[in-house]
Length: 366
Picture (cartoon, rainbow, N blue to C red):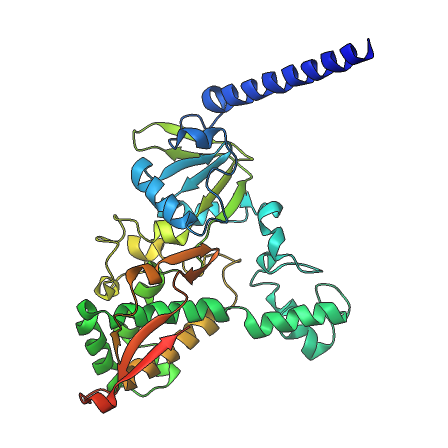
């Protein structure tokens, strides 16, 4: 009798689980508010259809957007958006909030870096060390908290800046981009290597912008949970309301390759940035440091480092891509912050004007 009761109980639980599974499946496919949003079928029922840990999430999302358009359902309650015009709407503080489950990985003992805004940044960085008190906490830092802040000061942004410089060297070392490198060197040789002058060099800034567009250092998705309804218009003309609670995300790697904003988006073409008005679609779609009050608090330092590094390097040295580096080696890995698949870039370096073998050097960037 007892055994029969156990069997019946197990069968009942299994039946309830199956009914719930079928109901959830049917609801997500046929009744869910996102049912009209295009996307792969299995994304309607599988929460992690596109994994964050695959290393190629950004590339997979780009392929999906090329197939389905600006709006792609990538989970039962998640939509990936590639329309640059919606970026500032989605990432405003009134439209959406950051889901804690995604940003928990960056959690510190007392707060995490993604919660910082321009307004409260002085409570972090060197402030607690200079004044002996953290204004945000209202007290001094513990040893562990001080260590975390010191590590942030020392390392935050260093990897992303290095990645940007690396990909600019890679692009300018290509034989087909030889003319770009020579034109840049001519511009650099006419100006002092001081930051104030480098900021005004039009072609240098165009090259840096193009490098950040095609190879964004933050390549991963930035998910948000909607606080209010958001209306979108699909490619078919159908209007869909994304309800509050919907997870939406955009990624620089996708909308910075929008063909309407950037004709021939796969090409490295700095000229596209020359004489671009700030109101142009290309400028509006360009968000390497995000926008609004919660944009990258280190962007001024990052821009200065990139200007000085690229300016000094290409004024004094000539680069050609080594045959040891293949396109596959330089594929971007989506680890939220970008990395390169081959873990190194090998180039041949000479001093401009030196053509002898003794003037050549092979340099490997790890």
